[in-house]
Amino acid sequence: MLLQYTVFLTGDSMMEKFPPLDTLTIDVLHTEQAAYYLSLSPQTLRVWACKKTGPLTPIKIGHLLYWRVSDIKNLFTPLN
Image (cartoon, rainbow, N blue to C red; front, side):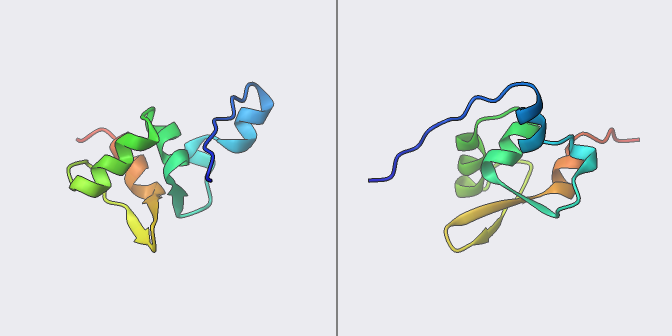
């Protein structure tokens, strides 16, 4: 049986798990990480991926979804 749980972090531990988006040196994020930066629930991102309705398209590897950091950053970049 697979159990899901949420870890509530505060202060320094939150910064370790979710460093500022501008400081990331990786190319992709897991769904839970991407959801944090977008202030959405992970399930919202999963629905976007399943229905292909969201502003982001994930990379699917097996049954796992990964989200491009560059796509997430572009959502926060104003259009000129």
